[in-house]
Length: 181
Ligand SMILES: [Zn+2]
Image (cartoon, rainbow, N blue to C red):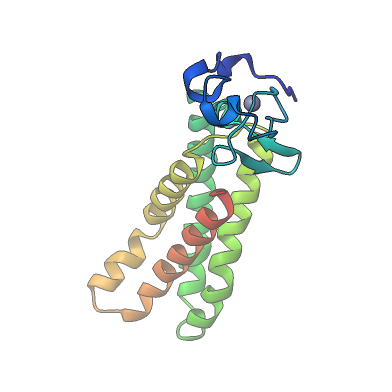
């Protein structure tokens, strides 16, 4: 991990530098712990390692998400495949009748958490700002494909066939909760 971000660019002197009357008057002794720029209290962002300036924060956000398009494709494939398996499992559980309702309340969130964990392991230290959205859509698509028989069953008047979809909703919610930081 680097502590100096050259990508932050030079700070405009008029905005945060010595030309700020408040800073120039010596009223602030606060300095950015990363690049040592004099810092107005209102611009200071508190971090575990001290106060940092807005430039540092901006540069950190830009480097935090390091995913390329290929990583998004990977997230989508993993979520699609595991979503299909989830759909199969939820469809199977949904077939056992009323007791399935109680079961999916536990199984749904667990399935979502498992998929999120699998994606995290596959992607390692790669982070994408919209991984959570990509995974949620891919998982839902994969699962709904396997739940088509249940969907037709719902249309045919079988209310219990809605249970797998409740489970899927809980699973996707759990997935998003895990992946969205
Ligand atoms: Zn700084």
